[in-house]
Length: 338
Image (cartoon, rainbow, N blue to C red; front, top):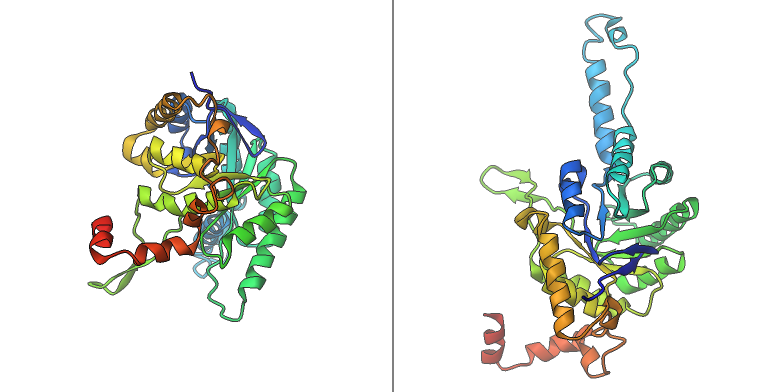
């Protein structure tokens, strides 16, 4: 039987399929189901600083609601305190105790001090690694891309230097030069890169003239962007590469690994098909390997990366391939599209 074991973030995993952060990884029952289905690791649902801030604001509002009615009304709740991250930290400890596979925490903060404070507290729960979710959709037009990226790189380096556990970063695709940003972060000692964070975007309800926030699942085609950058980065960074977004089946996972990914994260397919679908994905990877005589993941990892392909074939990772497609006769192009 083929060996699916991999090394990710310096952690030894039984296989490259990781359950990504979601509502499914915030419940002990589904977490145990994920482990039973054979996942190589699990990323717990993110700790969001903004969520904690909103809870704190709500508590302060409730405590002060009747202040103008009676001067001492707030003293009826003299010992109430804002929860802060304690509930999430407790949850991480319980998760780590409940499963034997590696547990990766996830953090999404806003302020620099909070990033560092929460990261240190998370490390104390005993998790095996920490995944940082960074993004910047700046509405301040005077901030240059260079300024934003350097601030993120400085923050990553400071967090990494405060912790002993491996630190990975989950980034979005909105960088002028994604490969350059990843390679600069790699130089600071970041242990891995998750490509890519799929952000929820606001939409407009034109019937009621209001903002709405649709929940949309990813499609297999969405995996082509992380596939492209896994192929570009393979052999160029010392940190692990993890494909995320659009990995729905064994074929998608195999493609990412062929491009150069060390592991893949799955979320959408678990919502659609249940946590047991992890077993199906693993069986599919194993069957594909065995029919081609691959004994282990490293036998084919990166075989379709830009570094490994011939000069001619590696054009697939450059714009020239796009131009080549557009220059095809209209009837051929239409056939490919439809």
